[in-house]
Length: 396
Image (cartoon, rainbow, N blue to C red):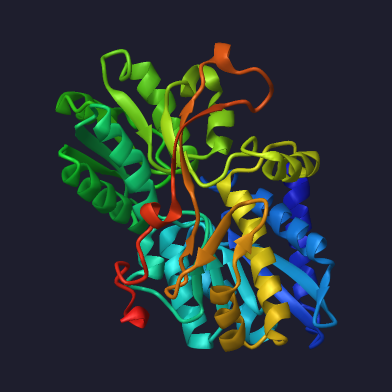
């Protein structure tokens, strides 16, 4: 299955070598398609973007909509090289998904220079629409501040008042640890320690032993994708939960829960901006997605669908591909689709409801992919920074 997908990517790359038609609107999905975040976004986000293009009708302003994809391998230098080539030689108008915060920040800076639209979905740092904001940059599904508010605030209120963090050693991890530490402290809790963990680690034993020694009530997993899954599996082997500590998946999606299985994941508390079984609209979209991919969408996949669709709606409303006009429309038009109902702030942050979930026990699950119990809904205006609070220089 994977080999077929990468063959398709290779074929896509060959197509990119052909002369670019001026009569097209071109969208790029740039993400991790082979590494630690391959299931978190990867080929499934590509499929979500294809669905958005198909649902929009395949053309806009009388021009065909084209999709290109590439694997950035979680390397900012590679990502910016691909993005520069797309913008300068391939006629790409907008880049989306951009898993990994260091990648997203680098590509957004290039997009600002080139006056091109980027819509970040898979990266977390709130700096994207904060200190590093751009007139052409947008952030869609979630961010570190929202994860901190929803997960951290809720657990402190229920007695989880001491925290130890296992933190991914790059921009996303630093920002999320800072954001959730501030929320925990403000709510009356205390951060008793943290340890930085290299991306794509295979052995979490020394880090988990430090967490156990801290005696913290909550072990916050400030990582994502396969790193989160591996840390949870090894925590089970070390008896972390049996010893009285609770695990909090601070960036975890249904893809990782599915990979772990309910036996391993049960009891985890996590935050997502989307759940496939939320309402009739989310179920209808998710069943279509499942038929194409064999799995239910996470907030990253549904968010990529929404970001792509919203961009195309903005192009249509603006009557042009010009980035200034499209960015203006993205901030004016409401978001109303299978992913969320929301609005885009002046700093480019898309604001929508966020959901606190607990992973069900196997005995509580009544059907395939029936994984979550909803614990709380946090309205978007509480979950996310306002434009003024974000620190975005554009909003001053």
